[in-house]
Image 1 (tube, rainbow, N blue to C red):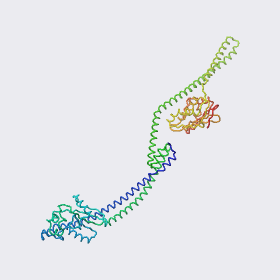
Image 2 (cartoon, one colour):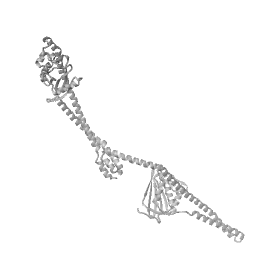
Image 3 (cartoon, one colour):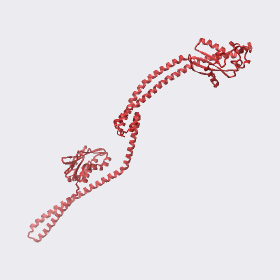
Image 4 (cartoon, one colour):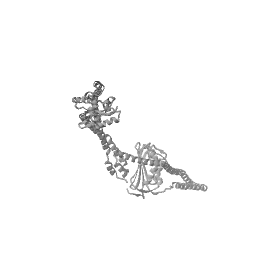
Length: 558
């Protein structure tokens, strides 16, 4: 079902979404870019903060490990050698106790540091592992290759950078944490024989942790990231405005101009299906739909052109045959009329001497009035002369008789048929024939075959006036009981000295090659009681006007 062009335009004008989609997409991309930039800054600064905290804990861990190593390898063996294997001095022999005391003193200088050394089933309940610390102990048990864990942990006081290391027992540790009976009596006496025993070598019994508060640093990093986000957002928003402006000027306007062109081309072939497809599309979608429709039209036109090409040879052959038949008819007319004219001239030339002979015979008859024998001879000559004159009169009458077929014919139809006959010749020279009838119908008495010969001959002369490219204007009308046919070209024109002899036989001019053609064209028009006039300006063209009386013709409505 077809829809109107205005309805089509109303539908397509609702959806101009390419710019909107592009700008929304660009805004999302730029917003994501701003957020991504701020996130990169935040992650980068957070990593720097964690790295700085890690380096600080590295120093603390190294100090604690050094202290515990000194107790384990130097101080404790010395105490055993002095006091004996059953002696146990907590303040001088427990590496855990000494490391905690050292960190308590360290915390007085740097209170933000937190140090814990905890264990499962610890001898001192104050150092029993919490739920989160138990999870870290399990982590190191399940991952024996891991030597530490670090990261930011949220706690009640805020976020801390935490570093955990497992406490794995060495053979020297089993003296105090192995079998209770083998432990120094001072330990079992102070803590009992239940807690802190039954350990094995490489067993993860607890963890050491150091925590540094990073809440303030993270808040500063967040502020920096937000500031970066705001700055980048403002910058990209300005860039967004510039891109949107130039996108509209350089792309959208051109796309819309192209769409207008496509719509003008396809507005005569708009249906509801096309409209529905366009309603759900933006400009690019509409371009795609319209291009597909144009491709379909081109494919259909190509098919028609192919069919036309296949039939062209037959059409050309038919036109050629018609032209050959018309040429033969014209040649027959010219040949017939040429022979008749020659016969009339011969008859005229023969009549003159016969008339002279007859006159002389009559004079001799008067002079020989008394001579009967001479009179008989002269009478015989006169009789033969009269017979010859009668024979010539009958011959002239016979030659002058024309076989004409005058019927009432539509002259506009005759002009159209003649135009079709020379169409192929005109196309070969790229000449356009424009037929402008002033009236719709006009039927007059004429010999259609002869008049068609006249029109074709005049049109072929006009076509030959061009080397390549041009136009021929054909105009018909009726004025004061006369039918008028005008054939006008803008070709090379006819020189004035040749125009004066245009209707003489065997004259060949630059634009019109008449031969025997134009004289007998004029004779045909004369036989219709009409006139033919030729006006020409060299270099400007030629105008041929043929006028035939309408007589009993019927003039149709204008």
